[in-house]
Image (tube, rainbow, N blue to C red; front, side):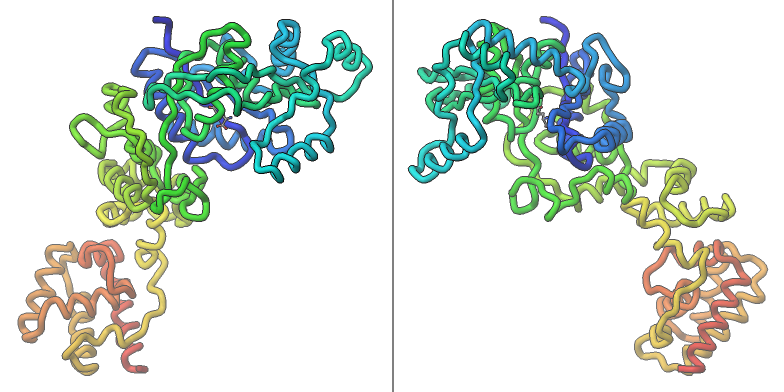
Length: 482
Ligand code: GLU
């Protein structure tokens, strides 16, 4: 068999979408597993909605994920250009060839006429499709009108008898009756190709062997097969991946789930966690593992393991996987990643920063949580309600006494390491006949301003003996004024 060649072919008409990353991942894995090539093609033929900024964002996002292509607009390749807007002449030549062979025809119908047909068909509850009005125009006459500069499109002349079928690798044989297939436009009046023509011509010229794309394109595939037939070409293998879905099983949408890859990047999802999560969409590892590196996904990759039942894009699961990946990083690496865009705390001494990272690594699920979780370590304690200091079955006076003893203990401590401090405070609680848990909660609130924080004694060490003492005085002041 010839070398496997696959492609991701996004239209740069919006933000970089998680669905694009998902399809890119499966193409990438297949190409790598089979020793093939992975192509990036920009399908920017919608001239109003395509922008280079969107294209850049998609390229950047896929690179962030590490899904590097072998051929593409930025790296070139044997079939350049890889941007459809730069291939207009190629599509025209191919559309012209179909006119020559009688497989396609010029259509001069005005927008008004087409609207009229549509309205009529809608009124009669008929399928909306072109009525074939220009199909009967004599080719010589059509050429004359073209030469005279009359506005026109080129349409495929679809044979309405029989059916068109193709083999989907995941779904088996799919067939549709030709009587319902429209004489699709191939070349628009602005000379730009439609998606169908450009996609088929490019897949052919770029030697694409497997078209792995989302399920939503299944209805376009018969049109593509008709085009392959019209050109006399053998179609590639089609693989329609299941659509990503919201929890309620509807197609993934911005209203229910963030869909922009930028969102995930900015929130502090790790690219490797994101890939792992996407790899689980419609796919399972033979041993059922849910956390695995890309290399292992590729090593055992098989399209046979793709299931077509709609995978649910579950943010909580993604957060869980992300947390798993965060905990697999060593502290230095995690600190470096957090420093790269996930903290405002520049100028924090390196060692203290790393200690803070070590304290949150077990609790964090996204890098963006770092600043909030560690705010009290570097920035001081946020204002809190002094009532929080008074524990159940404890009076204000007891609490004041506890805090005074604590201040004394801290001021006099010769060893402020976590183990020593904890032992000292446990001793203090015992002598006072108090529950250590209560004392620790009072300390935690005084030192961090929060009921939930990083481990208390490690945090106190990081904050420092003197600063802890100062915070206890502040707590005493608050209680006195309460
Ligand atoms: N340009 C289409 C898209 O935006 C490509 C579909 C295909 O892969 O053929 O997804």
